[in-house]
Image (spheres, rainbow, N blue to C red):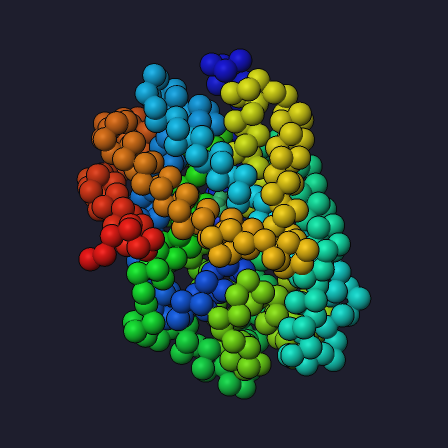
Length: 453
Ligand code: PHE
C-alpha cells in the first residue's frame, strides 16, 4: 500500500491546488495574528521586514517543501524517509508532526472565538455597545471556562469531519468557493475602515516605518509570522504537495499562494489599524485585537448586522481551511506510517490535540495562573511554534533540498522533467544554499538572545 502511489488521493485541478494551498496559508494567521503581532512590534517597520522575509526566505522555503512533497509522494515524515533512506532527515518530519499538534491546539481555540462571534452577530450582541464595552465583552468571554472550551470542541469536530471526507471532496471542494468570497468581504471592510474619522493615524502606523521600534526580538517575530502565515516550516506543504498532480507548475503555484497570502495580510491590516485608532484601542492589545476592533466597525456600517455575520462566518471558514491542513499532517502520518485507517487516525489525532487545546482555551480563565517560561499555555504554544519550531524546520528543509536532494533533482521536480521552464532555478538554489539558512540561523540565535552581534 505504501509504495502504490496510485492509491493515494490527489487534487483535481490547477485552481483546486491553489485554492487548497492558499486555503491553508490564508487564515487566522493573516487576519488575527498578523495585526496583533504587528501592533505589538511597532507597525510599519515590522511590515517592511515581514515583506522582505516573505520574498527572500518564505517563498524559497515554500518551493522546497513543494519539491520534497511532490517528489516524495508521502506524508511529511515518509517523504524524507523515501528521498533519504537510512538517513536521519526524517527527524524534520517528526518535528513537523509535533509542531502540528501545538499549532492545532492554540489555533483551534482562537478559531472557536469566531464561532462565539458568529453567535453574537446573530443575536445582535454588539449593538449599542461602546468601544470600552466591546472590549469588556471580549475579555469576559475569553476568561470564561465554558464557552471557549465548548467552541473549541465544535471547531475541532468540524475540522475532523472534513478531514474524514478526504482530499478531493473535503479539502478541495470547500476551499474553492469560500476563499474568493473572503477576499471581497475584506475589501469592503477595509474601505469602511479607512473612511472612518481619524483613520489616517492607522494608515500611518501600518505604512510609515519607524525603525526605532525594532528590536532583535521583533525581527525574529517577523520571521516567525512570515513562516506561520505561509504555513511553512512544519510539513503542511510537504503533505499537500504530495497530492499535487505531476504536471502542476510548482513555481507558479508558490508565487500565487504567497502573493494571495500577503495581500490578505495587508488588507487585514488596512481593515484593522485605521479602526484601532479611530476607536481609541491600543494597537498592542494582544491576541484579542481583531475581536475587539471589528465589532466597532460593524456598528458604524450600513448593514452592519449582515456584514458582521458574513465576516465571522468567512473568518471561521478561513480558519477551517487552515486547521484541516494542519490536521492532515498528523492524519497522513498516522495512516501512512502507523497503518491506521483514515477515520481512526482522525479520531486519535483529534483526541490528542484536544488535551492541549482545552488547556489553550482556558488560558485566560481557569488556567490563567499557569505559567510556562513566563507565559500562559496559549502564549507559549503560539510563541514557540511560530518563532522556534517553524524557523528551525524551515532551516533544515532548505538545507535538505540544497545540499542533499540537490540541484538536478530539484530542477527535474520543479520543471516537471523539462516541460516547464525554470529560469529562476540558479537564483533559488543560491538562496537555499546560503542566504536562507544563514539568515534564519542568525535571526534565530539573535532573537533568542543566544548570540549578540
Ligand atoms: N498559515 C495559517 C494561517 O495563516 C496557519 C498555519 C500555520 C497553517 C502552519 C498550517 C501550518 O492562518
